[in-house]
Length: 136
Image (cartoon, rainbow, N blue to C red):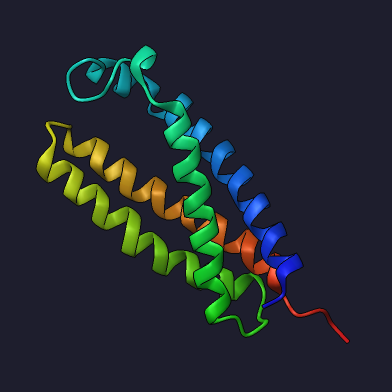
């Protein structure tokens, strides 16, 4: 394993996830969350933000670690494909589970699924760009 690329990809992926999550959950879905605050979700003052950061870091670490098993040096297209796989595996399925088990609107589950898939594709593109084989 190329540890330098691995560490760089984990750090860049972690920061990218934080930025994308801020945009997705802090801007795009903010009004929807506020309407469900105190019923479905914790109030903002009761959130365990530190746990979200730890979870995001672990996700970035595992995302990159799993990517390294199949790296063929094809760069961003390989990262795109990987992002689609992880997005379908994680974002789409977890959104359906959340909708089935929590009193949230179906529109929110669809947004989570679609936006989550896009987020995983972007993360895959980033990791693929970091792991691309340099041209000779």
